[in-house]
Image 1: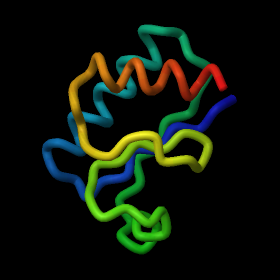
Image 2: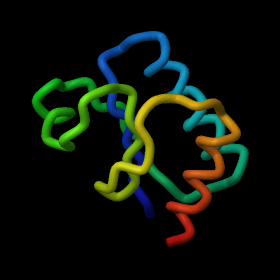
Image 3: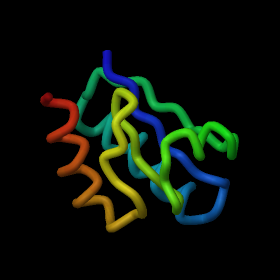
Image 4: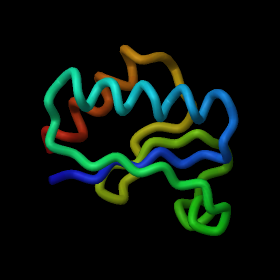
Length: 81
């Protein structure tokens, strides 16, 4: 089972990414666990300068939220690896 993490501080964009990720996991029947990471020290350990960020199995695959379609494409690619 893959682990998907949404790194964010709780802002509206971070929440939107989390909601989109949860919806996409259910819609595509992906075997993945979704976590929402809000701890600043943990977020900083990923060496990112902005949130939200999307992480699959400890690899940052996206920073920001470019829309649900692009998130779905990125997740599909990352979950197939």
